Amino acid sequence: MVVFFIIVGILAVFILIVLFYYNRAFPEAQEIAGKMDVVDRDYWFHGDKKIGFLIFTGAQTDEPAYAYIAYLLHREAYPVVIPKQPFQMSAFGTKHGMEIMDSHPEIEKWILVGHSLGGVPVSRIAAARPDQVIGAAFLATYASADLSGLDISAIRIIAENDGIMNNDRMAHFNRNLPEDSATVMIEGANHQGFAAYDSLSKRDGKVAISWQEQNELSVRYILDFFEKRISEAVTD
Image 1 (cartoon, rainbow, N blue to C red):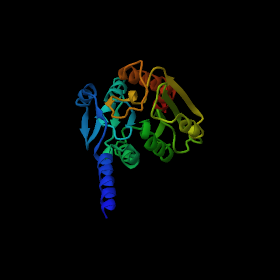
Image 2 (cartoon, one colour):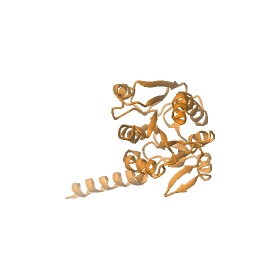
Image 3 (cartoon, rainbow, N blue to C red):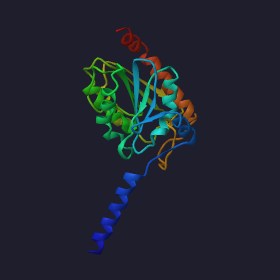
Image 4 (tube, rainbow, N blue to C red):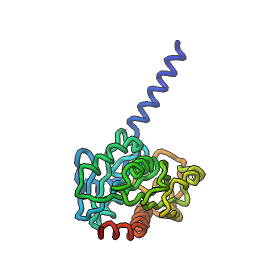
């Protein structure tokens, strides 16, 4: 009986950690997030363009940690949304992401951005709504759903010193990428540098660039890669 209660106690602590622990955004990112509109707990940068960006966070990571990437995209006049995730678990964010898309018909097309576990909702939404999505950007993650037959574009941006994401697993899912896809590696970067948060994990690799630089390079690659698709969508 004593062993039973010990096991129950350990499981309870584990569940509490999973549900309530999350990686906190750096103060600099929180400051930027403070300038975003909060609509139904989602973080918004409103913009005039007909193409918007949806950013899905990594596992148990503070939404404001992605505010700098959102700001860099918004600086080009794009509307950008960081959806609020239940318990900071973006794997459960597919339905809410599609709700955001459906409730904003003024944004005609979307580009989905997912970091780490955020690749799950990006993949699922792109597979389910190819008519609303022109592209997907996978930051240190992969297409978990089959997008190979869809008329969308995808860019996969990986970090040279990523100590979290399994490279073999990412390579295994390369077959799910659409025909129009590309992979770019950021030298001197690591896994958490795609956002701005303080992680308790010690597994990630060392960095030779700042998270700001990694965010800036990521956005530059994303905008350059999708430039043609965006131009075609706006023309149509």
